Length: 187
Image (cartoon, rainbow, N blue to C red; front, top):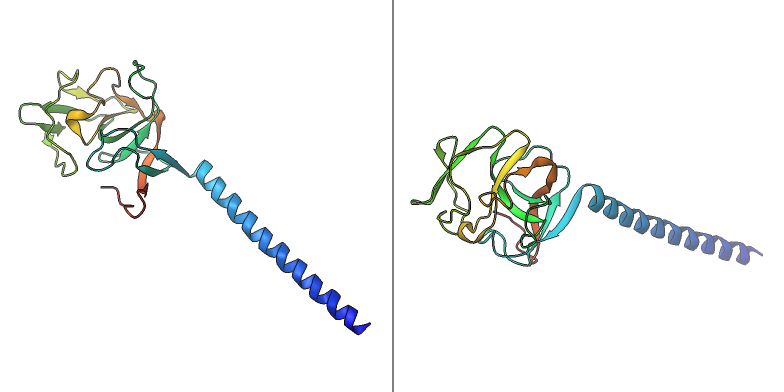
């Protein structure tokens, strides 16, 4: 009888341990799922407009909790645009925010915000491609002006089909790269 009691006690411990392990694994899976629904998002980069910072087929993690865009942030937008050629989801860098004035000297390839030349070590080439940009633009509150880092091969806010991006259409700010594995940092 004592042997049966000992065996029952061991079985109860085994069942309890299995239940605890299952509970921990299930909680971890739920926590990760909730994080990726409400806090983080993954997005694939499509095209070469962000070279040399990001490349076609890279995958990035975004912070979905993103309230105030700042110049230099890499963001993903989902603003509908006026062309079936341009995807609705774009990965671009914020160049100017509400209240700032942007001007571009296409002859020298220099971008100015509020009269100050930007230091842009992240760009592929100087900005010589005009798109539809013709004069200085003051960005209204609630909008941002975005450009790709591969300036002469990027369709961005210089193109009227994309235009200024409403802040409400920003899905999030890029935090780090997950693909290719090992190249986590985003410049």
